[in-house]
Amino acid sequence: MTICLRRSFGRRTSTLLFTALLLCVFTVPAFAQELDPKKDVYNKNIHYFQPPSDGSGLLNTWGSEPIGHLGIHLGSFVDYAHRPMVYTDPQDVEHVVIYNQTGLNVLAGFGLWEALNVSFAYASVPNRSFNKRYLEIYKWKENAVEDMRVAVKYMFTNRRIDGFGIAVMTEFTMDSGDPQNFVSDEQMTISPRLILDFGNEWFTYALNLGYKIFPDGIEPGVFNIETGDEVLLNTGLTFRMFWGLELFGELAARAYTEEDDYSEIYSELYGGLRSTWFVDNPLRLTAGMSGGLTDGVGTPISRFYGGFNWHFRMLGWL
Image (cartoon, rainbow, N blue to C red; front, side):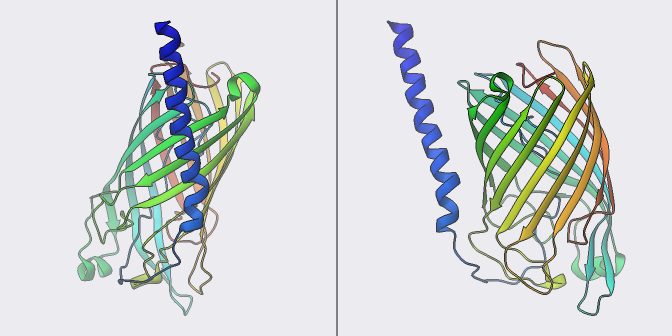
């Protein structure tokens, strides 16, 4: 009887949490305010290398798979981007603002019941090389802390069992980063996402469709960096060449929803290898590089990255 009551309580609690998450994903965009310019700023967080904090999916593309009840995920990634910020003025003249940037993501997550994940990401830029011409004027920091990210994900169907996975996720960014340094959105943002993936023991395809909401809406300032609601797209495919080694490719993109002469699209194409070690508590090592496809702010010419994910419970196909 005690066991039955506990299971029933767990199901009811999980259902309530799932319902709250679902309402957030599908109703928050409907109530999002239109851009309401309140202050002039010259930045937003342009460090778009943001691996899933629960360790799922590919590189920047979330997967539907759960961590598992009371399972734990820990991870960390380092990336080095070349020319991540180049401003093109109305006369089509390019101005390099940041030549090189080193980024760090520290990830942690845990599972509740069999379908719910809660995860966190602490990010920073330990080192940046600015154009000295602008650095003397604006006094930016060469190292800075980014906004913290908190994500809640609920799985409908399990790709590991059904071959096709569906999940919904909402990510919140906290206004905790250094302001006026291209690492903070300077407000709390909300990013609901729909996660779809399918595959088997040899391949996995994943697709994320999201919408990032800036409730305050900030008008562009220096360099005309647009800050406002964005449409998010991440998609990728991984092949398992043999047990423990994967080859993957991925596309990450985002676009500002308001039309403007200076509005640019961010898009980046990634490729890399992932190696999995151990069975009971798998450790995954990832390394690769990427290249920018467009000229949008935050799009580097090239990026090199590496990192690990450590799961204290089986997560996805090996």
